[in-house]
Length: 89
Image (cartoon, rainbow, N blue to C red; front, side, top):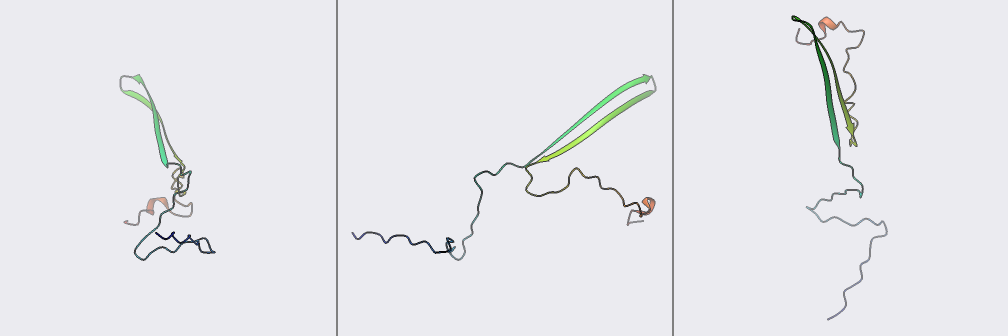
């Protein structure tokens, strides 16, 4: 049996991908993306008909592959009339 021919890599270091095939590269360290959400509410009854509630809501994204700005408030620009900000009106 004759010996197999040695492998000769292209000088560019990039191998040709056969037609109809695709490639996927995943780096050795690819952290898992995740979003943490939490909330806290404290309620206190002052009188039989008066209740006070105080709440906090938080969200934090970690190791996201893109920057969605999930913690940014979507505020109407100050030059817009907030009453007529709804395009359906």
